[in-house]
Length: 294
Image (tube, rainbow, N blue to C red; front, side, top):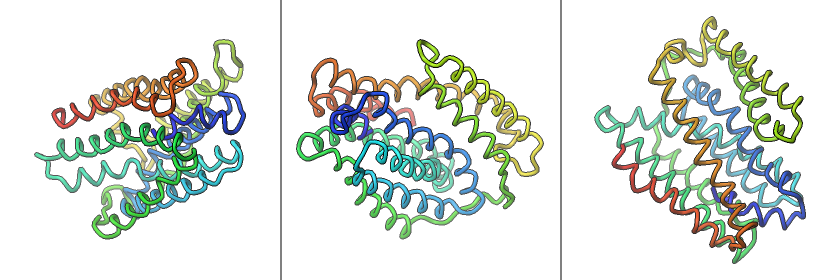
């Protein structure tokens, strides 16, 4: 969230167009989406603490590299590294919370994670806007480094190592490749190949590829000896409907934050800090309501 409000500044700094600078966000999101499910499964099999440490370390190194970027192209490359780290560690906090908290307090434990995430989402743009105005854009990445180091130390000190003993050790490589390919094609189709005035043949090809790989993934998971997503989950209406609901919520909420940042700065003439403060009510309301929901 700290990067979104800085996109207009990065556009000016690197003297590039909005289509190119948007890939600073897009590259991160694509690799994050591609790795999310498969890394969660591997962590179940080979140790959640181990993978969390790997992910947080990669994310911190990626942040340091982003701060040193000398061109927009290299910043996009380093954002891919940062997104890979995020994709590895993101699902594991929830998984470990479910294990640590007893069933009657599980909702509260998950709500606490959401509160922390919402606080970070709220203060990220404000801190980012302040850093860009007071110092430079490099600091929106440098600020992650001490948090990453402290996180690794606390994880080593306090977190227990956990596994899913029912997951087995056989890696569902075909499932990971099929799902990763489907997510990659689908997200690139949404980002780059806009069918409305854009490259319609490319969009159709990517969407068809995503649908085909998605169907093959579901077919394979029903037959795989050690599936990444078990048939029981795929047939669970509660699980399926909750994911569909979250899909539309995230598309609306997260997508709008980037567009609002661009609109406030480029169209309305806000400073970076003013734009950040204008976005703050969205996560702030989530922060107020989530503890009650939990």
